[in-house]
Length: 521
Image (cartoon, rainbow, N blue to C red):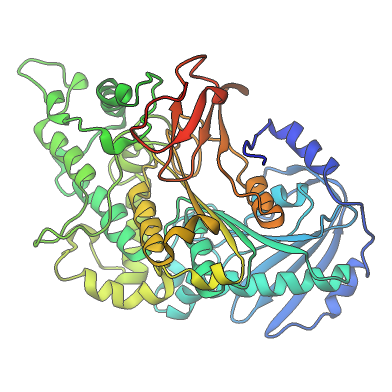
């Protein structure tokens, strides 16, 4: 059994992917003939042959390179679900891949499509039924005000219809049904993947689902907004980005060795019980080297999570260890100035355009009164929280679920909770179709101090096509393009345990075991 999955640098992996593709097959009809294809409530607006090399996406100044020649199909499904399907001319591997979005969608995920195309897939992506303004605004929600139908398209309908149509276009172009269909998405794309698995289990044979924003309504209230309230409602609670490294270093110093290895990574932040009060400023201490009492309270509030007046937790909070780096707190929690963090930008737009109206001040949100009507408004369209995945299990579908332990956006505890809820229904059979991989030291969907590059799609393909379930997935960390650390990711609840010999920077010196077991000799 092949248990070890590897990731190699992008340039090499792209070449290898092309070499591994199925024998080239000629398209059964020309690209332009797809304009004649009739699809329900859908118009194909263009079908254009794109030469191999680079492609410049609309509204972008940065071309995507190293692409094989492909047929680019552009279409729209009523009311306004724009989608594209890319079909490689000579390098089709016989399979289809749908890719997800991030933030509030509103754009085609061109770079994710390019990655699928390089592997030989026909691939599809959708803007989910609206266009963000400007297109670079990943959390624009202005399109949603007064349009619950667009929220539904965003939440579940858009991707499903793009998937159905994308597979039909693929079948028409090549003259055969794709042998397998896969999905890959992280963040909002993770929500989309779980929504597909829950509502449309026949759409995909395998799903690669990362850092999912599946508990969508509660995440906006109990994460995006709560972290903003903790640092912004009282101006004196705001934490400047310049102080984030101070907190990050203190957390690592206190908790890094909990797993027995000092490597700058918290393998399981649930074991970290660092009290930020030790960083409270003392009389005469330089302000840059400590936190005020109100800033300390803000840190504690963030780690504790949002609660209503009865003490009920709204959604699990982020955990210690997510502070450092450009993808950590300086981006999500603090921003470079007040009201410029990613959490606030996400919360402000959605609260004004989806939950309430444009006069609403989200900092005045009442967790006792306001959460219930929010759930009534968006839960059906947006919340992918149904743990009953038995329809996916029965039809033989497989899912690899993963989450970065150092995610400063979506709580890794939320994903663990969801996995446990699924397991409560499907019991000991759960690992036969669903496996969760927690990624120590990975920020939101990538980056961070830990090994955070891994090839989940190959692991998924081998599981679906060869019944070779992933016992481990090898992840890598790189510095300046050079791999400097590898570590196995283990199916939850197993963790990577050091064997006791050899470099702790090499995956071969670790084994996947249940927590608290002795090192393997």
